Length: 313
Image (cartoon, rainbow, N blue to C red):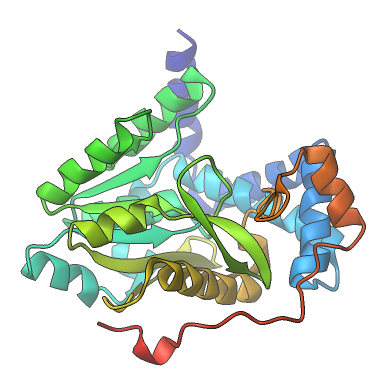
C-alpha cells in the first residue's frame, strides 16, 4: 500500500511544469540540508580541503539544492525526452554507434553528476539497449520504487547481489548491450586505489575487469546541467591498450575536470576518501576528525598521469 502511495505522489508531482519542479526541488534540497548537519559538514570540509572552494559552506548548500533539482526533474522525464534536441546535447555519440556497428558490448563508466537517471533514459530513447549495475538499497521500499521508476523508461536494473551481479552483467555482454555503472563512490565492491583530487580514493574496478575480459568498448559518460532543463552528455573512449589502473586514473581525471567546473553538481556529502590504502576504512567519526584536521589535503606528490592524447583506440 505504501508503494502505491509513493507512486501516486510521484505521478502527481511529476505532472508539474519542468521549471516549477526545478525550483521546488532546489528549494527543498537546501531546506533539507539544514537538518543534515553531519552530511553538510562532510561536504563543507571536503569542498574546503579537496577542492579548495573559496566558500565551502554555501557551495555545500548548493550541492543539496542541485540534488533536489535533479530528483524533482526525475519524477517525470518524459518532457525532457520529448524535447531531445533542445534538452540534451550529446558529445561523442559516435562511440555508441561504433559499438553497435562492431556488434560489441559497450561499458559506460559514469558518476553522480548532473542527472544520471535522465542520461540513462535518454540513451534508451535513442534505441540503445541499456542496463545499469546498481547497489541494492537497504530499504525494500526504496529499491522497489527505483526499479519501477527506471524500468518504466526501459532502463534495466542489475542489482549487485552476492554471486548474481557479475552473471547478470555478462548476460548483457552476450546480447551486445550497453552496461553503465556509477564508479565514483567508496562501496563494498572490487576496487583499487587511484588518485582523485590528489588523494588516493577507493575506486570500483570490477566492471572494468569484466569489460576487458569480454572485449567490450569502454567509455566514460558524464553529464552536467547548463541551465534549467538543459544538459550536456560527454562520451569519451578509453584506449584499448590501457591497464585497469590507467583506465581508473583517467576516469577520475575526467570526472575531476567536470567537478571543478560545476562543483555543486557532484555529491560532496559522500565520504569519498573514507578508505585508505594504509589505514583501511575509517569510521564516520574518524573520517570527520581527519577532515577537520586538514590532513586530507592533497599531497604535493603527483602520480603518473595518463595522457589524454592517447586515449582514443
